[in-house]
Length: 523
Image 1 (spheres, rainbow, N blue to C red):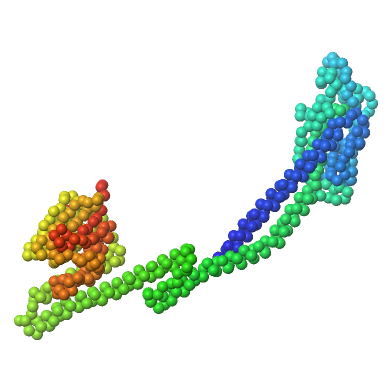
Image 2 (tube, rainbow, N blue to C red):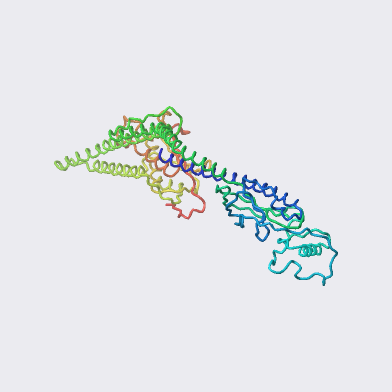
């Protein structure tokens, strides 16, 4: 866990460090770009104020600590900063200036179309560069005349392109870039800005000015080195702190694990795991573990008691049946056949009850069929012997529930058996709808159940009238089975006082859902 946390922190720190370095680099690059823009525009202002002096570009005040080029639009170098030995990134690699004189434009009358020769731009070998050679007044005058023609005799030179600045002004920044330059023997990276300007002679030039990125590289490298040096130390601190914190946090968990291992080895379910004093998830885990152990201990104890009680209950009829068979084998005329049949029936019922309880304990879910509870009550009462306490029925029709018909019939039979066993003269059974639930109520006029014993009577092999004979009192499984079946059908079984003074058992079940495709079972 500590290693995983350290790896996560390392990845986060590396990502944060890269983000910081990129942000720092971008910020310093932006500062260098602003410095290059300022330098280029400052020089462009100087260019825009120059007249027709042939040496006007040689007299420009260029910085000595930054690479600067002043070029024509076709790439001829007019001026360069002192000490520049090599440069890249501006589009012009030359570092030796070639002065190009340009004549001052002179206003002339607007010529007729025939007065404007097609080759007045100083043709010959000079070609397109005639204006920068300073070859005499004729070329200068022709240039001036042409400029006048373009502006209707205003005497102002036109820019070389549609976005060139006007005479004596600077234009926009036309390019940004990054390159390298060697200045006074030192090579470094630079951020360049290119600005257009037109001097008073009508010459449009480009000013390439650079700002050093050495400070950027130095700051980025220093920051990266500091981060790399501090990262191992920080990871050690994080790893150590994480290890200590997780060790302290998991110490109670280790105590719980050791105690659970000891409980498993000893099979002593009375032991409990230690519960931390803190109110955190570990304490909740310990508390839940102890609750689970308590429930497990109760289940094991209940199982042991069940096995012991079942063995005890089975032993009596088996012993009685064996005795009768042994007597009958030795003395056939003394064989009590009715008694043997009764013991056999008791064994059969007890075995059936034990099998049903085993299936319920295993989590067997009942079948989901529609059962008319009122019709089921009528059927169960009709098949009972007439010599028992009479049963009065008051059921509403079509009170259907969803579940197992066989298990619900067992519940009805057990409740009626219990009522007849304790009633003096009458037993009543009603089925109706109450508070949205189908309610089966079985009451008698007997002694009733004491309030203190109303929860215990649903336990297995519990009989409140222990003085009674087992043959009359049964094995004490009927009510336990009835309650478990009720729970499996999402219902409840409770006991209270009947209007006649005896016990009143009420089974509450949810009604069958409308439109259930299961077939209706009505006996």
